[in-house]
Length: 391
Image 1 (tube, rainbow, N blue to C red):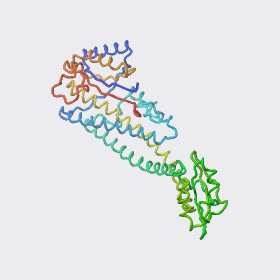
Image 2: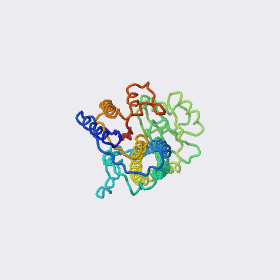
Image 3: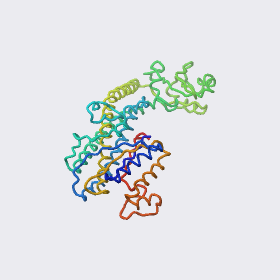
Image 4: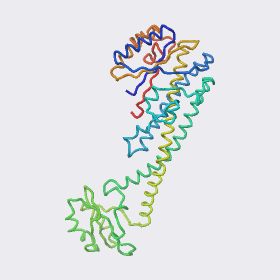
């Protein structure tokens, strides 16, 4: 599963023993894979400042998750012709160990081997400063994402609109890539070539009757130049002055005259526009994908740092000072085991908050002073990490 539970419990002897019991039960019952989650010691400041910071980090967590999901979706859209390779482009830099610095690793490995980046987010500065650094970093990435993807999307949509014109049936699609100059009588004061859509079952009728649909139709001037599943596109040449009469008679016989006049300059412009858009898209593809890969990694790493910060702040608020807690990362083995895993955690840590533990079993119990829905609150500090970014 790509789901993780990041929890913490006080670091005293009783609760470390409780963590050991949790590890034993979850391992024997094959409920989850558990690893310690290292969080450095931060400058705590006042408890009042932590309460405000807790709220801000909650918002930042939501923003970061939304951002990386948008970036993942952008990778999908950019890699439209190679969607099977999307996941291999959603990676994170491999942590802080010297041998891994230049490696890209999968997101699960990054989370399970998480180490705080001391260089990027120094722990000697106040917690508010660390949060501010993360906020500015993610806000800048979002701004760049909007501007870069907007330019690419405009290009992609223009190209799609042109390509749509080349699809569809003979009634709606562009004809500029079908017709040739030789199909038309051009620059004539008296004659004009029309294009007529004829149902397949009416080909014979068309050949027998087109010359007599009106006066002044040039004999043997019809030619089939394109077909789709429903019918064919025929040329016919006639005198300009009978054009309206011919259209009326054609309609009565269920033949449709397409309003099309051969304009060599316009056809050339349309073809050049398609070539230019394809070229521009190709030029933007590489740089945009590289930017997305690099900055997805940066945003993802920032997000997991935010999770670590939230665990620290909530643990201090919940368990008090001096700072003493142990964070653990649980990876449930399968969706069907999460209910049982929750029951095990509730049983092991029930002593931390009897009211919260009881409320999990009885949703009607209200926890005094708590604004969260009971389902979001447990006797232990808990945060959820879901790596299903493309769902």
